[in-house]
Image (cartoon, rainbow, N blue to C red):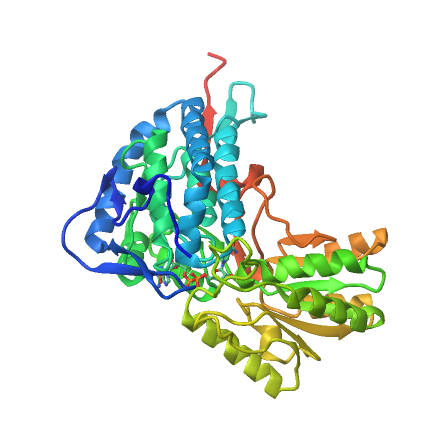
Length: 486
Ligand code: NAP
């Protein structure tokens, strides 16, 4: 399959610092299409020095950016939204060739990412303060909200566009500037977004994208006293390291980390809806999302029927190159990801899990793994305890509601959880008892720009999207006026 962009200037191959595409000699990062193994681009990387340049540019640019009326910042974000939607197809193709996901999913992600530009542009105009009752008659108390400062954003490869949009949009709306370090597997989507930000009228230095080794860029971001906030989406292990690094300069942080989502099917569930929800929640992006179903818990009365139906539905998924419009399941992001999935499945089958479907690599290429269903899974198994990040659905049986809740909460993670039931009392009981930041009831897809996305426990802190999302980029300033009776 080949790709064809209608606007080839969106395919950029260097970091974007202070409004300038970097040039010169240096290490080039190959970007590999996981479906074919082909190198689709080589990106000139930057290092600690380049990152420091970006931070300095962001500091300078922020002075004028935050001084713009909110309405003007909103108009820029609105133009960025419109440009992303105008170029949706090109952005989707760039995403699929570097990340592998099916083209329909890439188009959906571009629209999802763009929606944050639109939403936070609107929210820029609603950064309201407060007037608070004063402690005495001669005083008045007000609170205003101000941008937190220069923001650093470090993002993962599984949503190369949306994870940047969810951070850049509220940062810019609040009046902050931003230095973005995208994942090394997927720099092209980030650079295409920077190109569109530039066209939308984002001033030089307000949005910077630095591509290169995290060992050089990470410390430059975390050690800088100018950077006042780090927003990170990625693994829990790296999030923990970044929290520690940021402690030295006492930065504010937002952490969107790993998940281990339970998907509970009660006896009274609408099984058609539950199977459809499990399919989309498990196999979206070939299982490589933080909110992907990681463990399916099924009540004993419907266990066999649910498994039979899920096996039939999963067997119908078509694997292939994400650029093929008929593909449901693309490759995993790289061979290391396939190795990880293979290891988790081997550990679990050795411990007694049964392969009901798949359970092996595919002959389509080294990055493909078959959609897989494991049954007889118990809480001690590797697939139950770890974030799988691949197309493997482990199924566990349970007997009653309290056992389901205990199994669901038996993890350090707390990002997304799902359950299917028709009982209104159970809807509230279970939703309130689940130790998760987000709960989907009779729905397998829950993300949208209007709702607060985020987790608890080892899944992190902070919220992206919604009216709450912008608060992560704002400081509250309390102002006391005295002597008003004189
Ligand atoms: P990752 O290995 O943690 O990498 C994420 C980003 O961190 C990449 O840009 C990476 O750069 C960078 N990085 C790695 N080590 C670093 C260090 N020591 N200092 C500074 N930066 C560093 O995660 P991933 O494999 O890309 O993404 C998958 C994980 O993200 C999963 O756990 C998933 O659940 C989580 N995730 C969470 C959410 C959420 O909203 N909660 C959303 C999506 C994904 P390089 O690529 O250059 O190494």
